[in-house]
Length: 264
Image 1 (cartoon, rainbow, N blue to C red):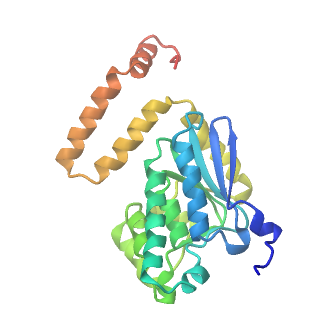
Image 2 (cartoon, rainbow, N blue to C red):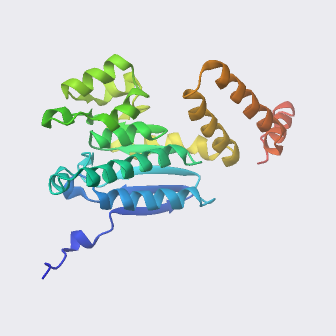
Image 3 (spheres, rainbow, N blue to C red):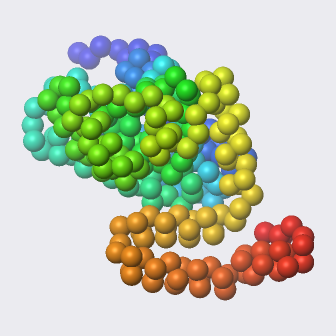
């Protein structure tokens, strides 16, 4: 007979709050340092998929409850399933989620209030933007337990320099928030008490821009990064041409010429 679930276990893995076009998804397993168990991955995947289909969502914020942002995968759960097929499913689900975050039409911002390690650091790297408290540390320290952070390396190496990323991966050493900002992993670093205010300062100008144009630009931004320069310029030119004939851009240009705010 299974033991009854505790109140904490009955809480949803991810909390959802939509306010003024800003959807906050909060990882809600603080006692487990918000580890990316199969259940957490499934819950966050469902919320990300729903956000992508919801026109009322203009910006997505990924936040976390408790002291840690995310401690990576749930090592206890992994150790309890010593099976290649199980591990492959776990990492496939994780990769699917990371790509879904990047492919959302809306900008996604990581609100990092606590330590982000391994796949937690990966999640920050796959968000479009990130705001961190100045006390936060970041690391890809799987190597400390004999596990090279292979999947986290994909996002990390696309945020910071190769040698800096490789050093983190092979030493397991952590970097502080200011170093993460200097290297390009996060955009802004503030005292913890100012985290939400700084987040709001980042969100407000985004909300003022046309959602359709932001979605078009985000898709182009990531696609061109994976191309050679000739193909990237070709795709960028096509995107700008399509953007320019859109009524939103036509109104924006007319407003600029007429020295008035655009009516979007």
